[in-house]
Image 1 (tube, rainbow, N blue to C red):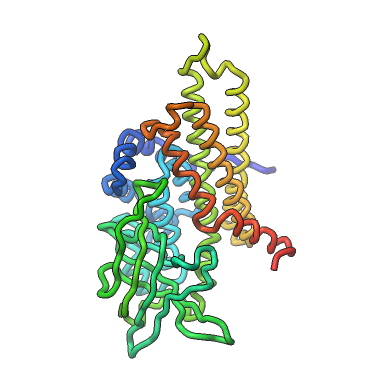
Image 2 (cartoon, rainbow, N blue to C red):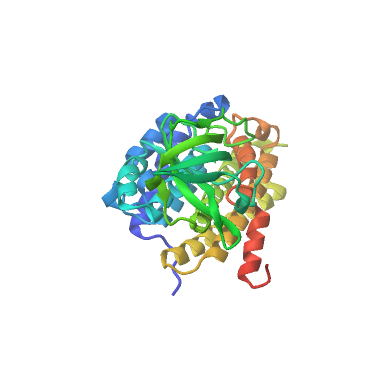
Length: 384
């Protein structure tokens, strides 16, 4: 028998985060967004709730939950705001999880307790200005000089990399050549290391209350033991990290898409035109019905991917499907919600205006929609 209901523990978490999002985030996030200001107070509250440590074991200060718990949390947060949700997603799946998955015992003891408590944030330095989706074309280098790695290069579009509580960035860098191909390794660079500089925040179309910057490394020296995982396995490690991250981004996308339904239902009941609530007109009813169908389908897709992940079964194809379907749903629902709201949908004071601005990046970040299609095709045996 197939049962898609949440168990008691997951449902209790979902309700707790839903209440937090409605009571603590929704009333204030609009002003943060307008000022393009990072919401330190909200992040601190999320940390106190244990949200940054959901999939991390209690040994390292986490909650000892699973990755699906993180996904449910992201969905509920994104129903209200995506800047807060992506701060959590990047902090956990890209900042903390690589150390949790591949770090030495000492690296875990040093970094994870603060990351799991939300007192510090980790970032993931993969994308480069000239690379985009071609992460394997890395130009950032790291060479050993005695007992130190010397890192040089530039990274672009890095979330959580320049906040006041950023603790580290894990950087992929070329550390040599093996069998005629670039050897790519992952190296932990603590914030404030000499030669490591962080640009001003990007001026972004959406996610205005999250932190995204370009990073540069000029003869940055870190200890040899800051190598994360096995030398030459950095690219493979982060491909695995991105598979998990795509399930999380799918959950975030479902949250945004659901938020569009929530707001549209409320508006359709309250707003009148030609003497009747606009929800009485079939054109509006059909739009909202299509929106709900997209949410339902996308949620099933990320649930299915998460289920395989938790069973330790291969889930690359399912993660790509979930990310593709859910990001499309978010973009389509944001467009339809804006249309339902009319002129008010174009105003940032209404949530759907923010949803519209936030939705597009979901079709780009952590693998574009085109990359997801490539991955699905490869898993079906028809790709290169």
